[in-house]
Image (cartoon, rainbow, N blue to C red):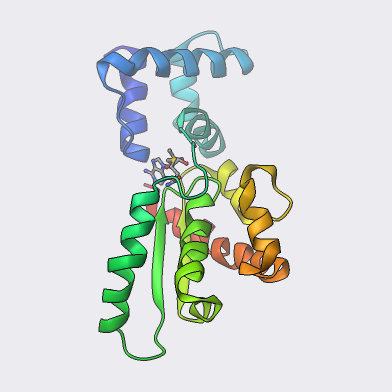
Length: 193
Ligand SMILES: C[S@@+](CC[C@H](N)C(=O)[O-])C[C@H]1O[C@@H](n2cnc3c(N)ncnc32)[C@H](O)[C@@H]1O
């Protein structure tokens, strides 16, 4: 097995991410970039090093994950959630009990926050008392950004204005952002070997 194939197997075992043959070139490029930054002169040596270095493994994972996200990234999913899925779940739930959501692979948190916001838009702010949204991600860098919340964040575009404009008062929104991601780190361990 080549060093590149060894990395493919390792990453698959650690993350579930599998680089098919036709995408191996991008893994190769990431590995070489990282090796260069570490002044490591071969992939074989880098592989031997990373096996016993959890921090380096995390750094490599951060390098290979694709973190694209934005608010309401899949509008039809949020429409289905609001029109059909959420009302059905509420019907099955005991009055006052919480409905919990998981944004699996939450990146910097826009999806988790969008769940909150779209439910508030449809059901009113009181719905926040009925829901909890958690986000998990294998990439610690994006989780740290997610934990920061969104107020004043340029990535949130119109949503910051919307939040500030009354759907959620800014302070509540900020607090909710933090609440949402409070447990990310713990949940993240689910994805570890
Ligand atoms: C393309 S982003 C999608 C973000 C968000 N769900 C959205 O749709 O806007 C995919 C995210 O999944 C995360 N990811 C990939 N494999 C993962 C795994 N095995 N466990 C947890 N997170 C993972 C990546 O780090 C990345 O942040």
